[in-house]
Image (cartoon, rainbow, N blue to C red; front, side):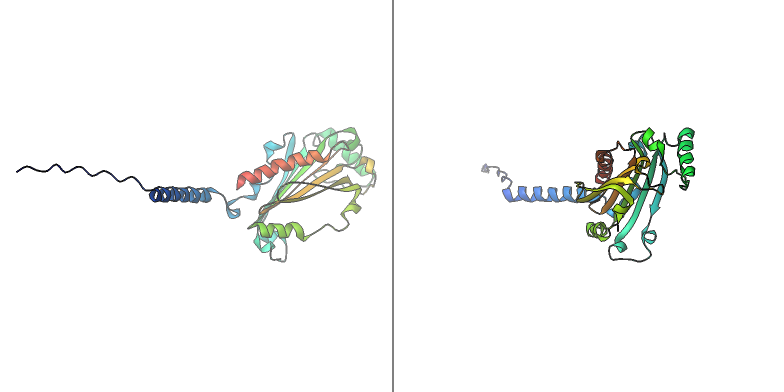
Length: 241
């Protein structure tokens, strides 16, 4: 008996629908993996959102304060219930903390009955004798979502803030999702603007984080000095999420 040669069946070409389904599933897997790898506000430490020691060389970290929801306020507004935690860091120039600098500052303070503090209140001839930034403040407040952070950003204003400054000015600022900035010669009990530091500050919201960076320094410091530091802090925030 002769067997008929039955031709082998040709494999059906993979359909377009099957390819599309495979690619779609693959993209969903990639997207889900990426979402899992992105930090949420609850997973981020506020200490990573402020300026780090290595980013402000020549300055000594004097204050590193962590604030939780109960430390934020004795009463809870709706957005403050979403406040997770905050971090404040205060850096002072190494040059300020030398014996000769401290002696110069304290002598003038005693002469004009300005309270002597630790760290020192920088006033007097030192302000005119030196140049650059003397101290840096870096703060970040972390909220559970952007809506709560925005409510904090818009909630409160400083009443008569300009009364504490000579040559006070509001400054246009563009950083994060929304920002505000100001500057002037910071007033002290001696009331002599020639011997008092210049201050610049920028406050901004970046997603679920509300931050502020401020500097005090000689009369030659400019707004770009604080903006440069704020951009470094903004980069830290971006890379933390």
